[in-house]
Amino acid sequence: MLELNLPPFEKKIIQNGDKAQIFDVIRKRYVALTPEEWVRQHFVHFLIEQKGYPLSHMSNEQQVKLNGMSRRCDTVLYDSSLQPLLIAEYKAPNVQITQKTFDQICRYNIVLKVKYLIVSNGMKHFCCQIDYDKNSYTFLPDIPTYEELK
Picture 1 (cartoon, rainbow, N blue to C red):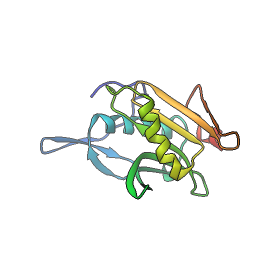
Picture 2 (tube, helix red, strand yellow; picture 1 turned 60 degrees about the horizontal axis):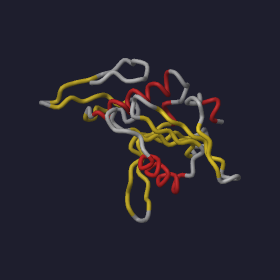
Picture 3 (cartoon, helix red, strand yellow; picture 1 turned 60 degrees about the vertical axis):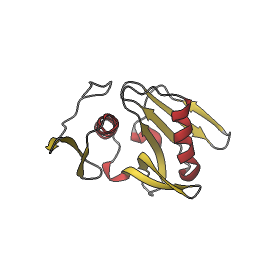
Picture 4 (cartoon, rainbow, N blue to C red; picture 1 turned 30 degrees about the vertical axis):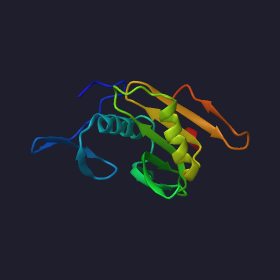
């Protein structure tokens, strides 16, 4: 797999037949090692190990209902009251982050109404903070720590 613009982490990879699988610390099971999953696992470990996000407050592949259809958010972070606080959307490293990517995460946010959105392809990372009172958003220069989110 490609080296990403994220710190290395202690990964657990196994072969299941001809398919590689990586251990997901959130779902507590091995999942197919796709390029997008490679980014997700790196980013989740970055959030936990570098930014202090509590593992117990995170969910991968969180299902949301949008216009009667089921969708899955790549990662959702909850606050201490278990209210959604942040959504992260991942793309494979070779996928450019475009307006379409932001449109996708914004659709999920229609349901969850979080304060922070993150989009990453493992090479480039974007984080914005939403101000519902002013009906605006601000791109942040860095991914905030968990303490900074509160």
